[in-house]
Image (cartoon, rainbow over all chains, first blue to last red; front, side, top):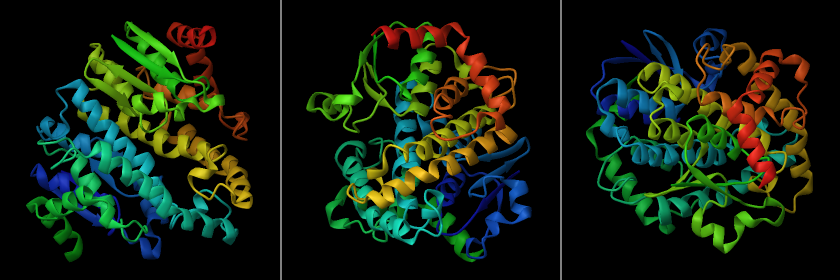
Length: 209
Length: 209
């Protein structure tokens, strides 16, 4: 039995959606970021990185969204969700996910998490990081819109774990200061994702929790 | 036939080492960062991200180190190098690689690549980002030393693609202002990696190129 540690309005939604897609049996534990519960001694025993999501399995703890997405697909007999049986296609899935993980998500994080990269008392630099987020995140969406998102799904006709990952990040597009009118494919993808049963179930569970 | 686009003293060494580990037949093209060749019109046609490494296959272009490392292992019949046949172990490999990709490598990049995250003319903030690198990168190595690097290899007794990835980043540990004396396991791992034939071959090729 799996346990997903998540927090609302975080990247953990992506893994949550894929758990629903594969019909996994799992429980959830909500971590409250407002009270910085992710840094509590109890949670640090679960995940010393002080981040969500974390997935507890009967063999230990798994972290990092790109790893967890592929794990759920592979473990629950849905390698098609990551195109795992075709090394080249799988590498394209993985490359997209790595771009979200180390590019788009990181750039977004500079809006709220400045003290990861500058001294927490340096208000000038923290404000400078925030001001640059619309520039850096818009550049990410330009590449996604032009080159990476094939449509209707990220990998084309086949729905994969790339889709809930992009969807989760695209929730924050307007807050990141990006003009949605410039990215019609991304916005259309976000709408299609929001209509899937698995997406509605995962969001519904997080809202009810 | 594969073509690896790389630049010296960059993360592309990790994929280069794994190509040597599996005995792949490949050619290399060196991109010169000093003349910002990665932003030349010719290279942008290869990789619109203006980054290295990029791997040209007979089906297209692959990017992003975590994707390429697993691709080489899977494509060349060495799934053991990523523990690909065991979903949980593979997820641990992937989680480690994601931590390097979106954590350690990103933190390191704030030393030279400040204008990705603040205005290029804001010298105060760019200096602030540089000053914080020893703090953020040291925190990454603390987690690696204490929790992630099992020894002798990252995943324990089994050598995997995590190892050349960590090795490549650990080349920059001193330049990032990290005290090597605090991380004996990481330093021992770096030494073991430097003695492998595949590592010597990849470095030798890049130096001769």
